[in-house]
Amino acid sequence: MNIEFLPKEKYSKSRKGEVRFGERAYWIESEKGLYEFLNKKEIPFCILGIPEDVGVRANYGRPGAWSAFEPALQTLSNIQDNPYLPSSLCALGIQIRVTDIMKAAEGKHETGHLRELVKVLDARVEEIISLLFSHNKVPIVIGGGHNNALPVLRALFNQSKKKVSVLNIDAHTDLRHTHEGRHSGNSFSCALEEGIIKKYFVLGYHENYIPDYVFRLMQERSDIVGGISMEQLKIRNAVDIRNVIDHLKNDFTEPSGLELDIDCIIHAPSSARTSSGLSAEEARMAVYKFSELTKPSYFHICEAAPVLAHRSADNRTGKLLAFLITDFLKGITA
Image 1 (cartoon, one colour):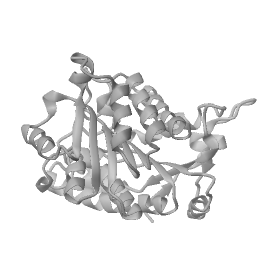
Image 2: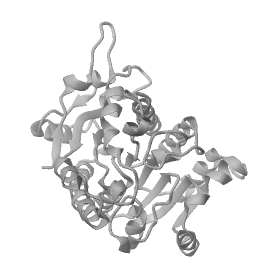
Image 3: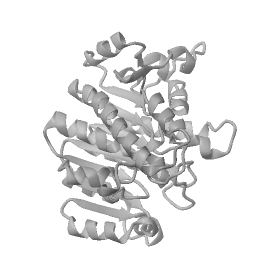
């Protein structure tokens, strides 16, 4: 099985008189522990990582997304367990094995080679996420590139036998041509072609970075594909984020998925870091409100790249990811 088990003592620290998230959560430390967790109905959430950036590089992006999961897990494990947080409902301690894929991509710049590796990764992600869905677990997936959305969607579609409604909070639509080969920019166009998606809505896309053919696609498939640009939200003030999410509740049916690309958040280190976008608080609110209203089957956070922060120790990105994870948990359990 393509899973790596992470040592609890490396991430979860203790302090006298306090109980931390990582101490209260169920820590998966072996394959036996994984199957014990899968059969624990009282623990529905599994937080896992995919430490890769092959999909981003296959899409001509800057490498670095491999570096997000460890600081996220470190921060999350050491926040306080208290009445605000359902720590005991969560499992921690696993990531999808990508060491060999990353090694095969090392020093390689030819996109054809990288895109073939993404297809290998797709199969691994789908296998593990399918295992979780088959036991009625809710995966919280920390990437890695946005390429990993496709295998997650495939797994949910195949397990539920229903098309999926997806909210993607993102500066980009990720609806690039599928004939290019697999990469981080075409997960949702691939899913549309495969008939996996019932509704797809992009919140906060940047008008300057959407190819004309994607706009045409959105118009032609407006019964399925929609979105609100960052400019509509924050420059022209044409609509309020809360109203948008309230409206989505009427259109979205189970199963639904929640995607968040960190490049939508202003100044957050990512492959496509932006100087204009949603604030961290706006993104957090959107995650909480959507989770509260629609109870998504999964949450996927992708493309954070703290290694690109140009600091020897960037703990801000880990904190941001931990905030988003806990906002999702608070919303879905509200």
